Image (cartoon, rainbow, N blue to C red):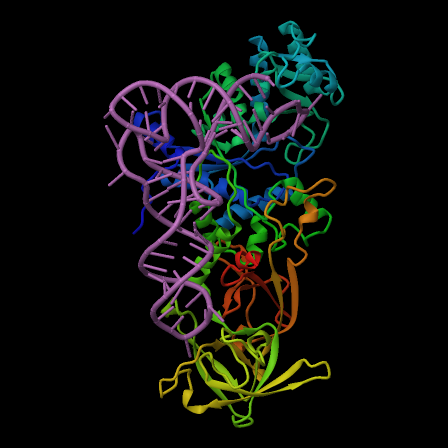
Length: 564
RNA sequence: UGUCCAUUGGUGUAAUGGUAGCACAUCUGACUCUGGAUCAGCCAGUCUAGGUUCGAGUCCUGGAUGGACAACCA
C-alpha cells in the first residue's frame, strides 16, 4: 500500500482551512466555457477539482461560463458533460453563469449606487488607448464622473436595447493608474445584440468574465475556485468585487496548466486542425481531446492516473508525452485481453505438417490476470506471420526467424525455416519451414531453448481487418515554436497515421465491437495484439469490415530512434 | 525598462530552518513462451551573489532566467 504522504499546495491550503475552521467542507467547481471540446489540459483541472472535493468529502459543481454568446454553443455543452462523465466524475449540480444574469445585473446597480461603476461612452479604441501600457499609467475616461442617477438611467437603457453594440460599456471605477492593468477600470458589461444558447434574446448586455466568474462562485458558495496561472493577476479584481458587494467570500487559487511535448493544447489551434481537415474531427484519435483519447483507446483510469502522477504546482511544466502512453500501458497491461494479429502478413507453410489438419491450441488471455482464463486458437499447415519477423540472412542479435534458425510459434510449436519463395521483384512471398511435433504447446521435452517467440494466425481461419497505426500528431517537441514564416502546422508529423489493410486476425477477434459502458457511454473494446501494441475497435468498425486503432506500442521506441 | 508568479537530476514532483527523497525516462543485469511485463541496480539535482543562523533548497537583499498582464475573450 503506497500512500502519497506529501501534500500538494492546494491540499495544504484546504487542510489548513479545515483545521482553522474557515469552512467545514469544501465545494469546488469546474467552469468550462462551452466554446470547444475538452482536452487533456482540462482533464488535469477536472481531476484536480473533483479529486480534491472527493478527498476531503466535498462536492464539485459543473458550471458553464457562458457569458459570450457569439462563441458558445449547446454542441459543446453536451460534449463537455459526456467527457466529464466518461472520465468518471459526477457533479453535484450543473449550473450556468447565464442563470445568474439577473442577480449580476442587480449587483451592478449596487456598485453604481456606491459610485463604484460607471457607464462609459468611449469607443473601443478610445478605451484601449486610455488604458495606458504595462509601463505607463492610463487616463481617466471623460465619462468617469457621471452622476449615479445618470449611470443608473444609462445602464437600464443599455439593458433595454436602446444602444447599439459597442456604443457603451459599464466599467468598474477603480484606478486608471494601477500597476496591475486588470484594475484599470475593467469592463463589467458590454452590449451584444446576440442570441444566447440558453437565454435567447432576453439580454443584449452580457457580463465580462471578471465580473461574472467570482460572483457565480460566490452565489454557489464555492470555497475553492481553482484556475490556471494566467488568472493570478485577476485575483485582486476577483476579491474586489466580492468585497465591495459584501457577498460570500469565495477564494481563487492558481495552478500551472498542463503542457505536453509533441502536442498543442490551445483551443484555437485544435479548432484550426479540425476546421482545416488536418485531422478527421474533434475525436480524431491523434487529437489531445478527451474524446480523441477515448477513440484512441485510452481508458478513463489511465488519464486519471496520469493526472495524479504529474502532480500539481505553480511552476510551468512540460510533461513528456511518454508518461501519458506509459500510464495507458500500465493500465492496459493489467486489463487488456491478449490476441494474436498479424499486421503485415507473409505466408508461412509447415511442409511436414499434415495437409488439411486443424488443431486447437490453448492460449492464455492475459498472463497478468489468471482469472481471464484461456481460449482456443486454431492451428494449421498454412499460417501468416509478421513480415518483419523473418530475415533470410540475419545478424546474430536478430532473435526471430531466419533460414536454418528455430523459433517458437506462441502456444504452438517450434519451427525451423528451410527455404523461401520470391516473386519477380525479389520479395518473399512464402516461407517454408518444418516443425517439431514434440514441441506442441510451445515447450521442448528435451529442454532446448529458442531465442524468439512469434505470433501467428492460421491462414484459413484468419479474419481480415483494417488497422490504423497512429503516432504522434507532431514531429517536434514544441510544435508551437515555428521558425520565421512557418506555423505549428509545419510541425505536423507526416507519419502520424498509416492505414493497414488486409491484416490477419485470430478468429476470436471477429466479434470485437464498440460497447456501451456502465455509465452509458460508447467505448471501444481494447486488446493487446501480442508483440505489436495495444489496439481498440474504432467506431467505423462493422462486422463486415473490422477496423482497429493502435492506441500505443508496447514500449516507447522514439527515444532510441532519435538517438540514432 | 511597471506589477505579479515561478526557478530542486533529462522530465515531473517532495523535503514547511535540521540526513536533498520519490516517480518517469535513460543505461546495466536477472528472469521470461510477448525484444512486453516483472525484479534488482547505476547515472544524475537545489539558477546566481551576498546576508541572517550552530545550521539555509527553505528566511532576507540584490542579480539572472522563464512565464503572465496593455480583448467590449475566458
